Amino acid sequence: MSHQSQWTSRFGYIMTAAGFSIGLGNIWRFPYLTGTEGGGAFVIIYVLMALLIGIPLFIMETGLGRKTKLSPVEGMRKLNGRGNIWNSLAWLGVAAAFFILTYYIQIMGWIVSYFIRMAGGLMKGQNYEETKAAFDSFRGNWPALLIFTLICMAIVAVISAAGLEKGVEKTCKVIMPLLFIMLVMLAIRSLTMPNAFEGAKWYLTPDFSRVTGKTFLNALGQIFFSIGIASGGALVYGSYLDDKSDMITDCSLVVILDTGAALLAGLVIFPAIISMGLEPGSGPGLLFVSMSRIFSDMPFGQFFGAVFFLLVFFAALSSALGYLEPVATTVRDNFKISRPAAVWSSLIAAILVGLPAILSEGPLKNVRILGMNLFDADDFFSGNVLMPLGAIVLIFYVIFKWKYEGLRDDVNKGARNIKVAPYWKILIYGLIPIALVIIFVTGIISVF
Image 1 (cartoon, rainbow, N blue to C red):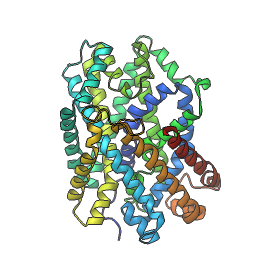
Image 2 (cartoon, helix red, strand yellow):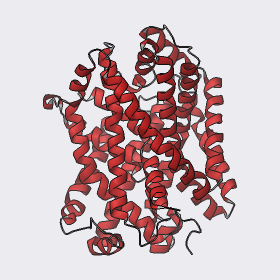
Image 3 (tube, rainbow, N blue to C red):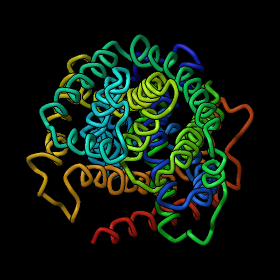
Image 4 (cartoon, one colour):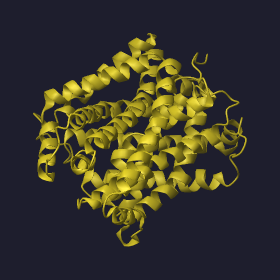
């Protein structure tokens, strides 16, 4: 039996799938990786990989969802029978989505706190050291962190419990167009700052002397994180599509929108950072420390700062809904409970499992796993272990079980402009599996 849920419109699907893909990966992680990997060269490598690896994998995963018309685990069981090794594809995706949620909602809490500070003018006149100290002390203040995390959990739960059409799709149809309008508005503001051109030049001029194997690795890892490959979202959103939908074009559009949002975020952040004489390679604090600092000095900074953090919240919210969907539908189908009960229990479990990450800069500050604090270890485990592993299982499933012909026949249903063509064989049997195994193995080795 298939889902009752369906998309109300093609626009609704594209906005919701883009909402799942466009999140903190684009606005927080892409700029700080670009900053630490030397700007333009990283951008070029990233865009090429998104086209050659990101789009095909996203189409494969969405196509598998459309083929089953069921939640990830039930769908794979339908195709392969219970207890089949290939069903691990679905379980890995659901596990990745769950572990991402455990810290993602916490970062949403940071964003809400910063939105309130910015809108209330509480950051005016702070210098860089003060802004950085404020961020560090906030991360150590676990009771406040927990409260903001619970507020975000409730927002996500209320929208998701309302269902796919009335909750998730309806929300994304409003916030995604708004997100792009805000990004363009902020990019224009950033580019009109003094010396902003230097920042844009740094961001878009490739310096290939800085490229190492790690640059390729980070670009590929970022594609997983940003598009959300092998974390169950594409599988579950694909399962709500009918066979007449032009899935190949829609999936390609989603990845293009996702990449466009990341490139725009860079145009918001780097011209402003270089204009203010700050360091572009300042890592994960880039968003909260450097950007807050910029808005506190900018004319109408309070307004633009509030808009910026609202934008980041929208991006994070639409992604959190996408990560929750495979987890909640799996809980609903396996325990035969209602959608609202599945949504709330999934989120409460994610908060409980995520508690060590919330305490990672407070009481559990000295606890280290492989040299990482608990927050970073959570991020590493979901983004560098579970997602690449899931993607490896996905591509092997295509190679050994679905095969090129099966994939082509299923995915080309409803396709009007772009179709899976013979050149895909090079990607399926060559480029993608090699790239995935390399990223996974080197990622693991780098830690040990």
